[in-house]
Length: 502
Image (cartoon, rainbow, N blue to C red):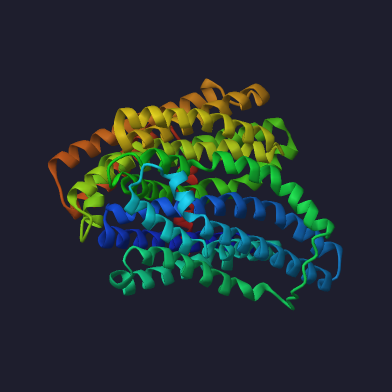
């Protein structure tokens, strides 16, 4: 097996294990704490640390890896080690100050994020935030250490480490949920971050404690990070807007949205890593080779993502409620909680589909070396999204927030397609519209077949059989209409037969 393919398979497996561990954690959340005031307080408190991690670690890794590669190629190992030590020390010092500020202002921050929470939930959320603030320096240190691994082309271990950290968090949750109550989730977050740092530290060789703020590479890193971080602070603050709006609704509303969002986000993460992320390098290479080849690669990727995400959306639309009933309805998570969370998951289907297609299109801009356009689109569409969420919550309560999120993700896809069409003339009815229409037709047929099955049968085995029927009908109609090039199916069949012959 070629080295790159082998590494990709290992990374994909590690990612799957991480998602599985997160899902087990999520099931225990429901069983122990349900959708009550304590869970509302936790999901409110954790929103700010998660946003800070997103707007810091992502731009940090994207900006730092090229600098580390330059330092590695352009000087002796001792100079690289000093640069790495300097980076780690500076980010550690800055993140500790940030954590102390969060701890000192936690009451004020929670009142600002969720002014509609009652005094009891607000006090609980602020106490949780003070604990969670301890994880911020650890998370940022993990981002720096992950960058060190990536710069040395070590991808498997940083992807596997979160599996161990999530497992440690689950062990703490199961062991101490009675004695610590909802605070066990905050301490689990800190423990997971600590385990991550400990396991990633092995990349450090000969650490020194000095800090040199005048290092030109530190200044270069700051120049690269600031635009990305500035844009992210605005349009990655989605969860903060949700908490603000939902804090005025009855107890449980924040929990229902949080549970539903985690289900969809887990699926989206698996699909994005498997379908989209691995293709960005291919798009970048095609961009160098010429416009025609680049356009063909984009059209093919867009059609393939539509093909694979459609049956997942159909399965969620049909079987979310019975699936959550089997998985979550136990302990503190009641049948009413399942019904309300299921409604949120279905409302978030646009987030799943629009998010994946948006990943393809935003990756196209990045492949062309254009980061400014996608930042402006993100800021503009998110502004519209905030207005949609206000209207949605007034019309449909917490489900309206999920619907509004789905709508503005689709709006982003439309805007990105329009901009790309003006630049590249890449989309056409024959090459894009017809394949997508065939996917929609196959999806409708599969949905009707699954709907009939769901009305006739119930239970775990019937659920599994219904899923298989949906996938079989979808595959048959897709093959019949040519929704995917038949050569793809022929290639799969040929490789399968070749393995059997061996």
